[in-house]
Image (cartoon, rainbow, N blue to C red; front, side, top):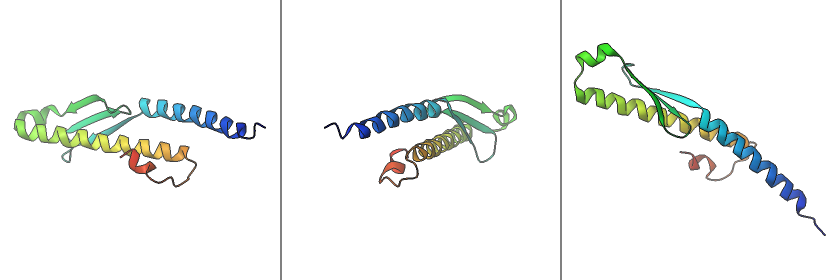
Length: 107
């Protein structure tokens, strides 16, 4: 009579697991660094920059355009790192199943 309720229980469990993973991702941080190592950007799982550091010595010798370029590279590196982390966490949630489009969803 209520044959499908077992599947419903699995869906509820999966929903709780998804929420836990989303919370873990939101609290995670990843860093991107400029090629010269003078600029670092730290981003959280909600894609917000939570820290940006620029080497004071670099500020004195570099042009504004160079600094801006390095900030962009560092920030984009942080975006890439948090995307990779998010995709990895969500893939783990799928239990190794190869769900079409899941990896691309987080990129």
